[in-house]
Length: 507
Ligand code: FAD
Ligand code: NAI
Image (cartoon, rainbow, N blue to C red; front, side, top):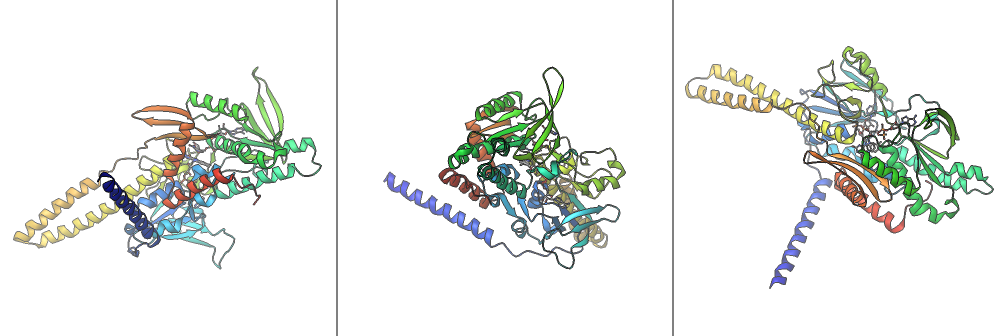
């Protein structure tokens, strides 16, 4: 009897789960008809399709505004898993979500223009946009007016004006960067085993140098060493004595945002993985085949050293984009800002009343991370939904006060009651406080199926590193992927690589 019931329960829950999944996929594939927003409503222009802008779009009630999104990228990119794309552990399309899918599920239509904002004219309230894609129509430059503007254009790669960086190294910010690195790794390997290559040249070609010991550089170095250990050395044994990863950092230690204990753990884990860490080494010049770095010696003296490389990945943090710098120049209140747009506690750009900034292009008290950008975007959605609701109630109140002056007797009492109810709603709606960031912790993959985590928990902090943390890292990032589709694709890529290994074709 028990087994019969257990069997029925299992079958029922299986059917329920299948039905739920089927329904979710059906809804995803068959979005409802969208409404056209009222043209008399305000035009809200959102720049960018990254963490800040997309989390705003996700929660925004689009029927309240005429929303226009402008970005040169017609997809959202889940950056935390980008280092895994450089070695083919994860295919890049698995961490991309088309912006069209996101916008098509909104209640009211949203316009999207695949273009770069080249200039924001604060006085005229317009954004100049340019289509920089390969295929251009008769019109590829135009102007978009705005009533409200959200700047979420992120940041560009910092090079500090060091000569040769842009020409000779690979960055790691966009999908194209990861694809370029993947190709170059294999090009270096295949060129190193070319017939009659000299020993010195083989060593250079197989020296993979990463500049910048922040989380981007550390995660990439770990992924690259994994690629070598798991796959490259098996398929191309000739390279195993010369393939070498070096991480170069100007400061005395790597991962400065992590606790001391986790920095030491990462350093000892890298030693075990045979990744060389060169701290107190500041790169000053880059040429086609070597970097020149100033090395600080223990006795305080400095020495210039030439380090040959085959692949050079440059990960030294963020710099301000031109369009942001130009906007800063138009607003006197921004004259002391250097690293991006200074904003107030409601993320309004200081010196303006209708421009907000989110993510890496805004200067707040927090680090430029996806976590911060995502929370800022969600805050702005709440703020804008509230502003629209407030305006709606205020206009209803105006109509009711006219009605009250014309009404008599019982009708007048009814209108008065309605006015009081609206005033109560208005007080509740207006209660939105300033932006407050809630730090969930920092996580980073360090190679050899290990990760480090500084997690905020019960107003304390837990620091952990190792294989269990790696399993936590994987499940946390899998659950944070943008959509169920992304989750399935990433999990499938992990399983595929475990069974068949990474693909070592150069493409
Ligand atoms: P972005 O996400 O960079 O988006 C900017 C958007 O603006 C893009 O769509 C871009 O195409 C668009 N854009 C650019 N120029 C223009 C223009 N002129 N006009 C219009 N649109 C424009 N953070 C974490 O918290 N955890 C992590 O694990 C993590 N891992 C990372 C790994 C890597 C490899 C990298 C590079 C970063 C990582 N980060 C991580 C940091 C995180 O990705 C950024 O802080 C986050 O992307 C910032 O979000 P954003 O919306 O400001 O900018
Ligand atoms: P970063 O700014 O965190 O680190 C850059 C490093 O490069 C610094 O340690 C700096 O000292 C070093 N550097 C600068 N110039 C140099 C030179 N000439 N020679 C040698 N070293 C030099 O940059 P990163 O790693 O790109 O991260 C950017 C932002 O994204 C950070 O806020 C970071 O927290 C976030 N991020 C978070 C991740 C995570 O949480 N797992 C992963 C990747 C990025």
